[in-house]
Length: 152
Ligand SMILES: [Zn+2]
Image (cartoon, protein in one colour):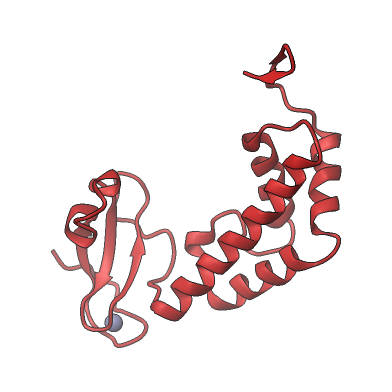
């Protein structure tokens, strides 16, 4: 099937494709949905169970920027979790809230444009990034119970 949003890179018509069609070697995402421009290899994921894209189509440059933004973000919340007793989930949630206050759409890396990816990478690379997330974690203790010193 064709979608009616033209590819912003080449003007082509993105196709509706499943994960099984896009990434046959990744069965864990077989049921995910994508819009993909086969003319220029730009694509974007869709919201679960819909053909609504999470953002604009991404070419290889934007996909790499999103990957770098994701990795920079993960490094921040993992470091913050390591400095507190927070679970990974709680640290990630606090970091999402922190980034969302600074980067438009920052809570959803898959939907970010190049500029927002750059903003996020810069923010996550700043010296105050981890302390900011640590402060947020400490001001919002997790409801996750801890038993015998282990997160459960
Ligand atoms: Zn295209």
